[in-house]
Image (cartoon, rainbow, N blue to C red; front, side, top):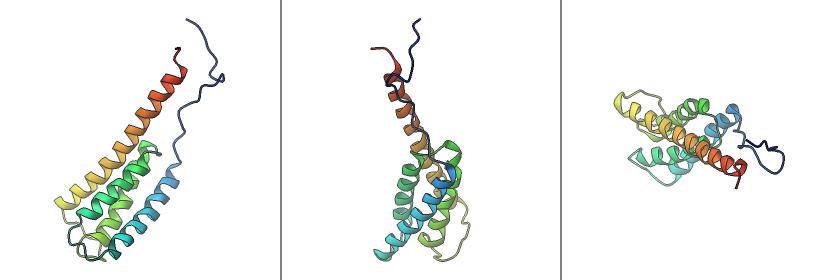
Amino acid sequence: MEWQWLSAGARAVPEPVATPLVWAGAFLGSAVLVAGLNQLGDLVEPVFYLVALSALAAGLGARARVVAAPGTAGLCWLFLNGFGAPPIGELTWSGPPDVLRMSCLLGAALIGTVISRLIGARSAYRRVSPP
């Protein structure tokens, strides 16, 4: 076994962004995204909103810790439910459709986080392993 110093050029895995910053990004990003989609016209199906907010949740999850995923999904769901799904302007719980929407948003945030961690770990392993 041969010891090597990590300060000899190897970089550590990137540090995730703080959870409150991720949640602030989810709040602002969801508001801007839903407002932008509302300007496109009367989108009858909330699927467009769900796909866009799931992409936002996955993107935010890529730089966040796993513990930020439920809050990110919850904030995205609030904007989806309040301004993207009928009745617009009211927070309601519709049962199975809302469970599906919340599951999609949570899954997207978790998938973004897991893929980012796997890529970071693999690249860190390649940097510190001997050639």
